[in-house]
Amino acid sequence: MKKIRIAQIGTSGNSHGNEIFNTLKSLSDTFEVVGYALPEGEREKFPDKMQAFDGYRKMSVDGILNDPTIDAVTVETEEIYLTKYALLAAEHKKHIHMEKPGGADLLEFEKLISTVKKNGTVFHTGYMYRYNPAVVKLMQDIKNGELGEIVSVEAQMNCRHSDAVRAWLKNLKGGMMFFLGCHLIDLILQIQGKPKNIFTFNKSTGLHGIEALDNTTVIFEYDKGISFAKTCDIEKGGFNRRQLVVTGTEKTVEIRPLELSREGYLYPKMITELNEYSSEDWNDEGIHSTSKIFDRYISMMTEFGSIINGTKENPYSYDYEYELYKTVLRCCNII
Image (cartoon, rainbow, N blue to C red):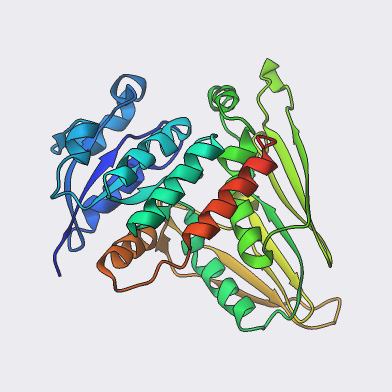
């Protein structure tokens, strides 16, 4: 099968641009990496991120977009620029993998979705938990009816960033809910669909005088109760307590931690742990399982290649990505 000629636009200080570029390089049977562009001063802003691009062709955005031999782009700029460059790529009929969730302009994102839909090009987003093996199993079990009717979803994605990162969050309307909470919103929407109501509690701890929204919670109302997404940026031990709990009438499933990285399988190599409870015995210890070691990004970018090549249908429709994006903006009080 012909290799997909691909180039990357941008990288960032706090997201996954370098990891995506390194993953493309590792998937050399699928992708031919043509080059990269750094259009928003990334070389000066993130000098520690430049090593990943050594040996690859430095290009302009126009050079990438106007090269008819380039099939696809990865858009990995800082969040505030994502939709801008994805839209340019869409207008040039490139297949797109874009870091999540997009910029903060709904009309611009609407135009992006309208353009890729009209062109029939691939639009693929960087929601990494979609490829987590425990999440994949859980979604299949839900689809098969093994959990019964879903009553609630509890999703947490906490951590302890430096004060510099917490200060940077002020660049994002919605703070942590926009930056990391979007991953959790994606999971809840996949499991339960569009909520009846959304209630936001996005706050700043004010720790060390930083006023960014670093402690955020959103509650979703459904007919059978509520679900929530919580993401806090001052929680020591928070990475190991990231979790997804889905309660159904037949079974409860807990994934905790969502990811775990340790010596011997360092990031982006991960494992995850799953607990399943189907007994009514209050003392039931459930069934515990641990995944094999997986790479955070290999499955994601392999899927992108498969969709472009036509060997797999995109499981996330244009309309779903648009509804998800709108929900993220609602959860951040942007719309």
